[in-house]
Length: 389
Image 1 (cartoon, rainbow, N blue to C red):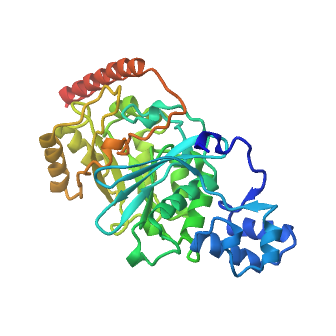
Image 2: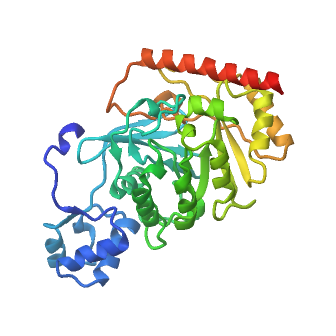
């Protein structure tokens, strides 16, 4: 049965995946079971990777039969799986209501990171991002967020939970489709499940949450989750950033930098990452680099320079390799780590900023014209600012 028809009749049973430990235990108690059963079922779901009660062999047959009518242990359905020539793997996952989102595994030599989505589509409209051309459909639930990582583990056979030394899927980055901090409650529930030592057990130091700058939720993220923070920055001044990232009009750089300086747990040992996509002629000059250095003063941070990954219909171009190298050198001379990210999975549109489902198709021509016009305005504003210095 093809994925699009696999869930035409939705299962009304409660999915135990995505429930907090307390909620899972309460659900079992509600059908007459002792609280300790919660620990057993949790272990099977998140440590052993069980997908059905029949696999939970330390539960009696009678108990398994009792649970079956009330509960399921469900993953998202894989609608499409693609593997790049560089071994990057992308999954288009379909959920119970037919909506889809993408997740990506980015392998290194003996480890790698799973890039997870938090929304179907995106509520933001960052001009350089392919995902941003797709309207927000809805937030993902905790089950759908956790489920993406579980599907990745299924794909690589990493059950039961291996030790850190033997993990290929060693890290998680909340950098897929959507803005995680606009779905904070569900993201927090999912990450707490993922971080639990007696389950999936990915520690907070191996999880990075990337935000475009939802200032009110940044401190809360640090307090409640303690994960690494990454900021999609991409410009050192409000004029340019507001053009390519409209969220900057609501939360300008002054407020965003203040939130970064106050981020709980940030230190030289746990630096904030500023992501910076290199757009030719728009944010890549030596003057931009110097302004960036001034902007992040007194913030323990590093930079991640991202060569722009083109997608069909984009009006932007990637900065020349020499320009990117010079930009990185300026930051390095000022004392900052500024590696240039090697693009991964470009051939399957799995690289940074390329994720997009087919939930909605928009006019590429209209977007291209608008974005070109706004880019020219930003360049002109920056030229005027430089001339005034």
